[in-house]
Length: 262
Image (cartoon, rainbow, N blue to C red):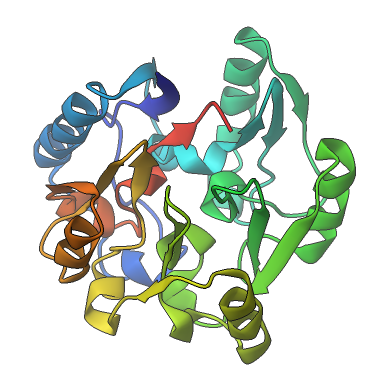
């Protein structure tokens, strides 16, 4: 079975503003509701994957977004180096988890935010979002460590500040994405690389439809998106969730999950 890492949201909340989604949301998260939403996602993911749970830490509210811990490739883990000072207390926590679980840990010297900006498609190609949180300089360092080529894409709209908010390689080779989040050169690179593309509407993008967990033929994404019916028509098993409390912090399903078997 697939292996993933999640972090319980007992200490989750919006206590600072570091992206547009957090604007005017400080103190507005309903924590009991967020716990219920997280548990619903956990219960569903547990049926198709082995889930490791990291304990939440007081005063580290975004620890729940384990996708930003880094990226795991084999027995190597590239640890994030957060661009925002508010999230840097997460780094030693995630480093300890990686080391305790037997990974060789590498941290780049430039800003880099893990699977938030670094995704691997079904062909094993690596894609990295740059422009807001992760940098091309980090991509060059990580290429050398992992011995892979990384395709850098430039994000241009701060609402989609991480790649996983607007770009989702699907298990059968298609790409679900929101093109307007990227500059023209990046759009062209994507078009040349993915013959089958599903372009989500702005409304679906704002619901974080691309922030989707893909495990086998199962897709886990926020509810009430029009793209879900398209995905079902392609033969995917689609699971939808109310993740309203996490959206207040600029995250959804994929943000809450780190894959441990790339």
